[in-house]
Length: 115
Length: 114
Image 1 (cartoon, rainbow over the protein chains, first blue to last red):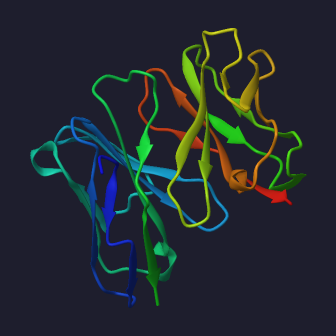
Image 2: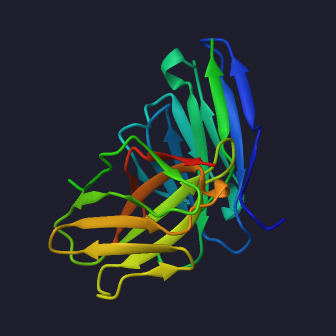
């Protein structure tokens, strides 16, 4: 399968714990994005990478959040000291070199529940 | 600031009928893209249709077409011959040409009635 994959698909954690999610983009896609989607809302942009460089971060990305993309391949999103307000679907997307058609290809998401 | 507004939280349509989902957006950019994404229950989001702002012709993909009114900043989606598989959350989305992030509306949940 050559689509965007995300792991785990579901994560339940207790408040105060750290969690890490992984995203594997489509091969050859040099841009990778993270979005957060809460219930009843559309996805909201968190951050994006061009290759290994993190080029933009939303103000939604508090200092408890960190994202990396070592070697410009897969990416991880870590949330430290989770809070109940962090419960959401975390979506990853990728797009090819150049802005092209503008389309982003989305993964299935990781649903986080903080108890 | 760029915004996308979908004023219909839910809609229903009879199978085989036609339905139109509304979307308005606000931007001061001249170069941008508009999208409709479909998110089926518990499945990943996929692109339904895309419109480049510089194109006057409305985009069409099989049963899906858009009515792009640039001056009114309106971008509606028409689904013809609705099928049960069309049931999903539909998001209208915007991306500025010089930007990378996509801005989404809150979505419209579409129900298909058999």
